Length: 151
Length: 410
Image 1 (cartoon, rainbow over the protein chains, first blue to last red):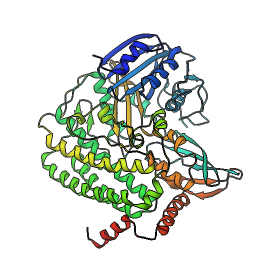
Image 2 (image 1 turned 60 degrees about the vertical axis):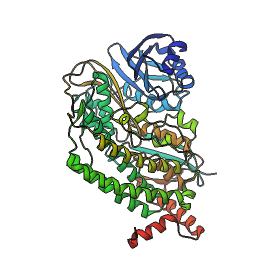
Image 3 (image 1 turned 180 degrees about the vertical axis):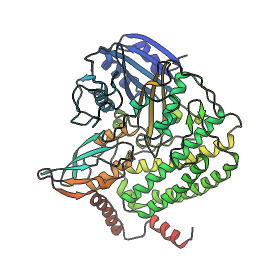
Image 4 (image 1 turned 45 degrees about the vertical axis):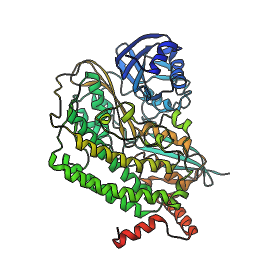
């Protein structure tokens, strides 16, 4: 199935321990790793595999906040999703934006909407919420109803 | 030297992303730039959790009025990836046609505005003259000039009728001729060279590390186009080329857009020829639990959608990333060291849905007095062009073309 150079490299020499790989289709692969190893894994993806970080998605689930790093490999016509889960109620993870400018804004956004703290982020201000937004309220978390907060 | 802060924005509520730039200037030179967004955050991702899978295309269509079909295409790609839906061939070609018509009108809009910024109002009027018939075609095939509501998971909502083909083809013929005259004039014009060449250079390394997309990255000579990198709709069924250009400056980005117009015209012509008769949608009975990733090449670059389902009628999470979200941070790499007169042009070269320069102002940092309005900044930019023209002492190719057009010689 995998003629993908990037995915082969991930399988063979990823510096992080791979918990699981799911290849849903030739164009979509999901790789699960532990949150402690996200910076090493991201460095490997960017510097060794030469793929582009399209964005990061944060999803609030019952067991923690899932972070999905979407890496687009143009040469392989494939999306590689690096997935990890951080624990609630105080989710924390090392910042990928510390070495990759492409991740700086999206990490600020995820902090605003889901309250994940990115350790070592170069510029950790609010991005989409206003400066007078109440601390500790993150609008995209589970249980926060639409229209509950008014400006 | 005394430092002054120049705020640009926050901007027009009709546009995609509100943003507020603060330029830190010393004299005429920009020494730092800070960007803030979120002024118009509408919470569309959260809103999606309260809409059914079929309703979401209508809300994401309204994220942007210019690339209003790119978001629905990326969204349906994500849902089709999630549920493993294969769409009929006729629907693939229809998606091609709608997406490329949109690229054409968006690029013409940009060319016009760029012309206005540098003081070529002929370019402005002319580009928009050719843009208008594209919107008429949209009205013909979808009933609306923008917000076409053509996409749905499993196919398209509306067919393009055979009887409308001649109108589309004759519009393309006129546009191709206009774009050719136009590209020739821009490429040869010494004033445009003086204003755009070597201005606001985005190096290859910066383009990669900021993760920029669309004409912004292709102007830095990197071939990155979702239409070939991860073919969706019917782009793998037609023959066309990815346009790249060397230099990374404003000129390169303009050239990419003008040359892309020809490719879009090529794609539409082939799609009209090859389109087979048949159904335009497959029935989607249910969306299973799971996750799907979809993206599309909008006029400004990659639009990204991530959809997660728990098997109910609504998505549990819908992540959207617009192209400007990754293109705007690259201003940190392109604007520093440039003059204020060029900054309006550099920020516009990314086409960040940012054209309302009347929201720009120059403010003294100590006293907070407004020193210059946005109009003043555009005037500065236009004046710079005028000076270059006068120094040249001869008629430029664009002026020549304008004179011919006025006399009706073309």
